[in-house]
Length: 283
Image (cartoon, rainbow, N blue to C red; front, side):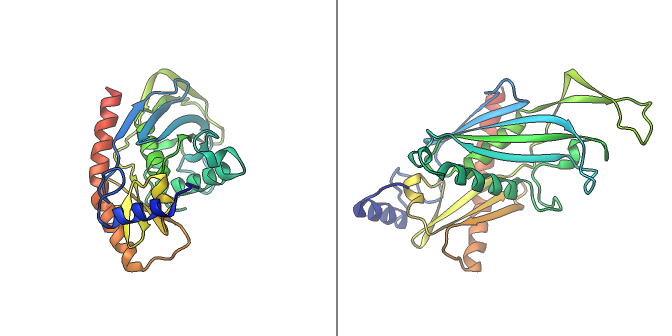
């Protein structure tokens, strides 16, 4: 928890009320975002995203597995986040880092993978199937928080989108002589790779309510003054892919609808900025 004096709290809240935050930004302005790709050579894809002093890494590892019996036409995707003990003072002692890691992992799965039916998923699990019911790719997406200065969820989602853009899945050839009852033999190519279509992967826009107003890309100091926060994942078409809320204070449905409208507007600029940063990093 960020320790602030009464004067500092009033300064932060007063600035937000006047649409002039402590670092000079307006309520709906993100900090500059920087992207590096290919930062972990051992992974199939990876990326590092910096958002102000918030610094995160995402990596993607693919392994051949077997689809579940309930969803034989879909591959498996798992997202897990770890917080470095040096990322923030609260992570060094107690279980602060573990609890936040779990919270972020669940929120990312909810916002990026859609519901249990797969509706709203930013990553198409059917694209991971090699042989229906028998062979699929299992994707393991790992996030690491290196430095925390607020808005971790948006930064991690951006890093995952960038890492998937950097991901090459080896091409798989299936032996044609296998019977329908056997587990087919597969050959994994060392030279040919399939790239992910990441155009449908959403970004996450977190709106943090401080006093009567809400802001995007809150710093740690601003988050310490929040009553609640709503994270909304939005894709390029403006479709809502997922939503999650934290903070104990309830929100009127009309406020949430307004937040969704604002998130759609803000997401356009964020997607364009992120896409240009990813393209520059990949080049």
